[in-house]
Length: 314
Image 1 (cartoon, one colour):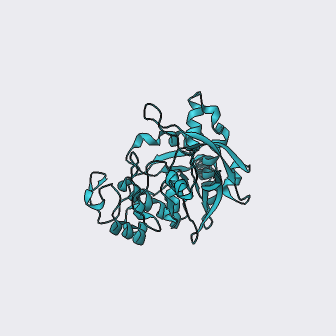
Image 2 (spheres, helix red, strand yellow):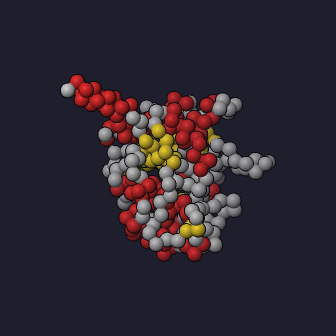
Image 3 (cartoon, helix red, strand yellow):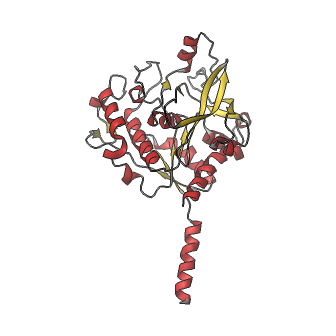
């Protein structure tokens, strides 16, 4: 009896020490995961890079979607985008890829195929920007599986946009073009111009939290989130008719830009249009401009909140 009790107590102790397994949604460039892996691990979670999610019947060359599924710009063709939106994860390997994962982080990156928007748009055609339909498909299926199974998700920049697209929202493809249409000057506060070497750099700006009953307020503990690392030219446009709620914005030249969204029907589905993981990386690396961005303890809260949301569900 004593031996059995000891075994039970040991098992309970192991379970108590078991870390929350946080998956990173698949993307073709594994090295891009390093910052988020670091952020998850210093926040007390176990980072797991997820495998690729594919729909049944689609053809691939190794991990790359075959060319017949995309147009000349690499955008997913409308007929296949419609199929994805209709079937979501149900005809895919999403369940196998996500087995044993407690939460998922969706990372930043290139633009999402405009055919996946609620109201499909022609590709913006801006030189130097790109989309990757292979990644779009995997993330769309991963996101819809997580939402349908209430697996906690955190979307970072592009990841927030994927949360919006998978939830049926519409997108603004380029802030510069959008401001021109409004007859206003755009000051590149969300994505810097390229320097003399052709590189872009993260720009800091502030975000206004608009709802005290929101996940983002529980994380930020303030009406203003100062110095968020920003690097994007696309934003969420219209969330009307969806289960999304806008809980953070930036006012730019008098124009309200959506910075934070949440799914009100889920336990934890948060998207932020900025990069707390970059603030963590800069601080840990002691980069000279790290003081321009949110401090480490504030940036960590996003990953700690995700991990705590998983613990509450267990």
